[in-house]
Amino acid sequence: METGGGGEDCCVKVAVHVRPLIADERAQGCKDCVTVIPGKPQVQIGTHSFTFDHVYGSTGSPSSAMFEECIASLVDGLFQGYNATVLAYGQTGSGKTYTMGTGFKDGCQTGIIPQVMNVLFKKIETLKHQTEFQLHVSFIEILKEEVQDLLDPTCLNKPETANGHAGKVTVPGKPPIQIRETSNGVITLAGSTEVSVSSLKEMAACLEQGSLSRATGSTNMNNQSSRSHAIFTITLEQMRKLNPVFPGESSPNESMNEEYLCAKLHLVDLAGSERAKRTGSDGLRFKEGVHINKGLLALGNVISALGDDKKRKEGAHVPYRDSKLTRLLQV
Image (cartoon, rainbow, N blue to C red; front, side, top):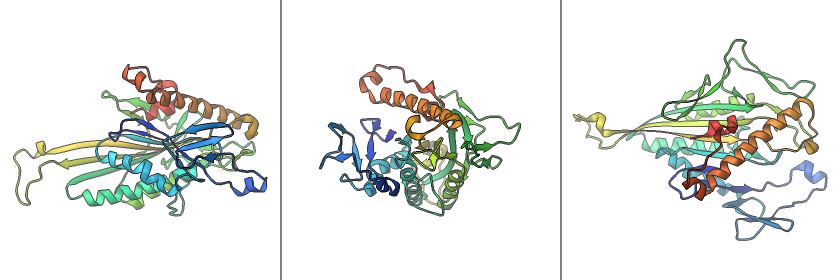
């Protein structure tokens, strides 16, 4: 799923990625239950048909086309000052982390986020002679409605315990991360780490560090289930020269010939929606599932409000404040 500006008519677009059966599913004799309608962005489950903006995998469009058709325009929009959000939503074990690339390790280029990083730096390289760029990244997770900083060097990984709970040990006395709104309406995270990067290698290192710190746990549906919503945010600041003067010349109104733009691209790997009956969750793992589903419900309500053009034009309320996830992604 992708949401954002970029000058498009609709602010919310939905793409479905149908992954192939994994080894465990084949061993259990499972069969594909999703049929892709040839020539249409439509899938059929039983007697029910569902239409989307794009369908990838299975007999739909090849997965390799996903970035160019869905994400590339959002990266271009970043350079024009548009904020955007890409969300991977789906059931536990459906392949969200793989699709987004938040399981990044050992330089593996699989996933949307590594592709975004590659295209971003290629575009910066072509524009650097006429525009000055600054890049910042942050990587946080929302675990049981608490914001955790995945790039904070003082937060240590806590291995999964006997009761199956995964989490982190934070230095005592460190204040919790707070979501704040500035006077001009910009949402910020007070206390989170924002790293300035100048190369693809530096940004990839941040992604890998955060990926290794993320909370995971085992359920009946997934041996390494993501138990948190992970948000990798790229902030692009640029100072454009509107009327560049010739080398050696100075402009009396040099400050008037510059344009400052700042935009954010949120790349979100959501925790999987789940039913306790199917995942076999109990105790702390069950409570994690409750928080996950509450956050996803709030996100669904926000997307529904944003996707209804009539309500949006009438100024209908968008319930951003119903969860920390939706509040943080408010732009």
